Image: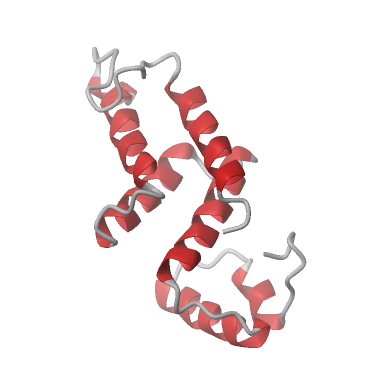
Length: 136
């Protein structure tokens, strides 16, 4: 949000490294109030959050697995919305191909995915999603 021109005291605090979920929610609420943002629209809020996660992932600031795991949880909690469902499937495809499982070379969740191309598929889907939802 800072990069998109938003600025407030609590937004700057929120941009820092915070691990306590309660503190994150409290700062987010204060930030929304300061900036006059209406977050009663769940889909809009999720799209903004997804955009931020994907952008940071593509910059290399967050690992793919961490982003997919976060979005996987949101997909389940929101009962599988179509606008982020691809990340649920990607989470399972990456999980299928994770090296800890040994011999698995192809994903049963995404037939086009294998160990050599899963990371690039994730990046491509992320870029396409950002392009489609750049102005959520």
